Length: 303
Ligand SMILES: Cc1cc2nc3c(=O)[nH]c(=O)nc-3n(C[C@H](O)[C@H](O)[C@H](O)COP(=O)(O)OP(=O)(O)OC[C@H]3O[C@@H](n4cnc5c(N)ncnc54)[C@H](O)[C@@H]3O)c2cc1C
Image (cartoon, rainbow, N blue to C red):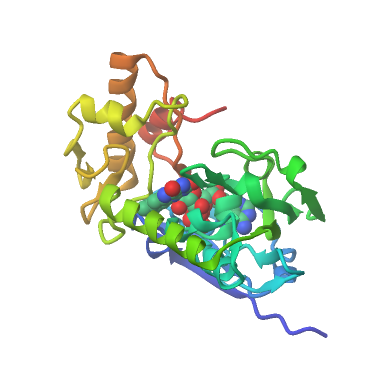
């Protein structure tokens, strides 16, 4: 019989599992080491990859949390097709493609998440996106626990949106179909991405979760709208807007999920009042909201 290697933790703080460094305790945390072990976890499940797109409630998370960080195997199926497990870091996937001179995933080099998170969010940057290169994903339906392969079309990937999140599926692994390219050109493109981020985004030593809100339409950037409103340095408790990019919020050290939510409310209502855009959150809230957080978040999520 196969040995069960899953780790189970109780009342475990999720703070260090998010790039914002915010979050209370999860009732139960599971860290599977093999895809088959995911199928053994039944009940109300919250999935956390690298937590780079998450605001975890300071009040904690009820039910079961799965941390995907140990699901990291990979395999080249042929010269251009790469299969990866969902917990592998996106930058590691980019490097695997570079090693074989495969182009299409250069943008992942600077995105601090897991590949499972990148697929769920249909991550993108500067014209490249997951939807351009994914072939299929092996998923588990968290209602029926059925495991199946979904094609790119089934995944319904669009701007920070997918079938996966809306329909509570767990991505176990995915296959990318890439193109042969020039090693130096791929490497240069990755350097360009990293340089751009260094110049334009706050570093992760200033805890943040990337873009707070989605851009409301092509060519309209939330960061610029907020900058025009003088948002640099706006703060709520320990949460402050970055002076490098106004769509990024920084945890100055002791911010709570309520501080972040209040700052988001200020950003959202100011943009709505001045420009009429009803912004949609890019960051995802997980866990138990306070009544105030619930009220705030109801205004900027898609129902
Ligand atoms: C500094 C910085 C820069 C960023 N730049 C970009 C950028 O340029 N482009 C971009 O698109 N994003 C960007 N992001 C946002 C974020 O890094 C990406 O969305 C990333 O792909 C999320 O991956 P994650 O593993 O951290 O997901 P998490 O934050 O852990 O989770 C995000 C969502 O995905 C779900 N999820 C995670 N893994 C799985 C899985 N295996 N199966 C099913 N659901 C899963 C979670 O439940 C949650 O709903 C940036 C973030 C930061 C902090």
